[in-house]
Amino acid sequence: MMKIPIRKTHALINLDAVEENIGTLWDRAGRDKKFIVLLKADSYGHGSAAVGKIAEEMGVFAGGVACLEEVEYLRSRGIKMPLLLLEDLFFDEIAPAIERNVKLSVSSLEYAHEIEKVAARLKQKAVVHVNVDTGMGRLGVQFSRAAEMIEEVYRLEHVHLEGLFTHFPVSDETDKEYSYGQLKKFGELRDRLRKSGIRIDYFHTANSGAVIDFPEQSAFDIVRPGVAVFGMYPSEEVDHEVSLRPVMTLKSSFIKVDEFPKGAGIGYGRTFITGRPSLIGVLPIGYGDGFIRDYSNNAEVLVHGMRAPVVGRVSMDMITVDLTDIPEIVGAGDEAVLLGTQKWQNRVDTITAEELARRSRSITYEVTCLFGKRVPRVFLRNNWEVGIDAMSGSSLSISDRDD
Image (cartoon, rainbow, N blue to C red; front, side):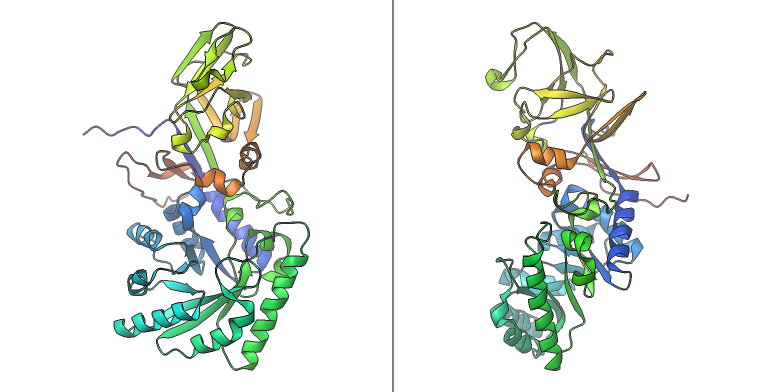
């Protein structure tokens, strides 16, 4: 069979930037700390197997995942590093997780006892990290009950209590009082457990906002930044002097460029009417790819190093772009950048995930997570293509390259 070409709508993933960002954040926390790289949600849309390979090369402690399917996917792609499930599982998922030597998060005594029962039946020892709710209000044992629960988990015969962690809901806000209050609780709990003779290997709290803004207080034994690894800041309020390199560039190419007279309606609902004779280009990307309808008449793309507005409604598979003000001829096949930097002759401009998040009243995490499997990921190291993850039959294959 003839090989299907990589779709013109695709994302370039700069693995050198992933490596640099991990190094920057790790140095900020202290290299004596261990590092968990988040692989959940396909590493926020960046390609979890490729990110996992980079993290393995750097000697990170573990990868953070959210569900058992992610474990299966990563193992099938050759990722061998330890994996920590950051959510509780349903009871019928516990046995396969233990059989795959996955570290389990624990939020309740009932769940811990079920893990003990399953591990005993399998004649294995389950490794767990207890999640303590110091103020997140989601998963985790309530702080007021945590010490007693942890003491009981510690005594379970087929459970090894390896870690204790909590999570910050507002570490990326300017006011750190709430986060510092969480740290105070967590520190008090750690001290109480140590006085009781309970030895836990690792304590961890630090997400992206904490590693960026208060690493000395939050690092403990392990740090687990998420979005910052991919070159995006968790909010506008954190310290942007911490240098992070964006990892993803989203590109497409025009499949048609045509002239329209004044008064022509463009796209579904005719939400854009040309106010002058206009040159309109069509890009093969839409909300079916994660370029959402909120960008209708509310986004720009880069063409020849200049901004050109998205006009009309974003449809499932296409968007329309007003090219009238681009001074040079634009034709079918010309490149457009929807996220990232484009250079053209003496012009250069950048569209950031932060900008797209503002336009959609969302957050950077969601922007990149939404780019779906129909958008191939092309992985780069030293500006060389080293792997592709695409629906067209090109399975992920990250290859090493000698410099």
